[in-house]
Length: 110
Image 1 (tube, helix red, strand yellow):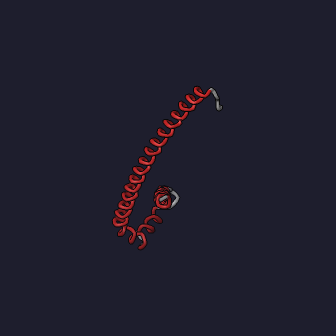
Image 2: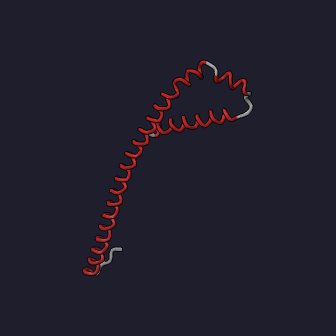
Image 3: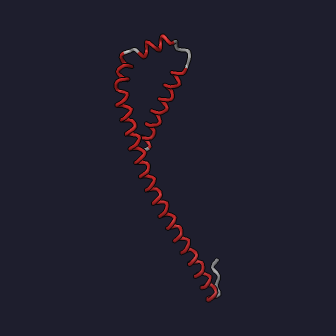
């Protein structure tokens, strides 16, 4: 699952990088116009709606999967807390029994 989130992070950081590049003033407006009129950018523009919807669907699936994992984690956490409480109860019971045995026999095992 870490690989999936890594790929999403790489995509989002790449998107931030592209936006930052677009904001830099060292590229002239004429150059930007020629870039945006290129056939590659035109093909990407035609496919952008579909790719955006697919990417949003993938993100929604990832968030639902993350919610499921969080629910599993919460259940395990609750179970471990319950086990810890039982262990503490048994430890206290053992300590009380040990004190009682020491009182009855007069022997201290410290």
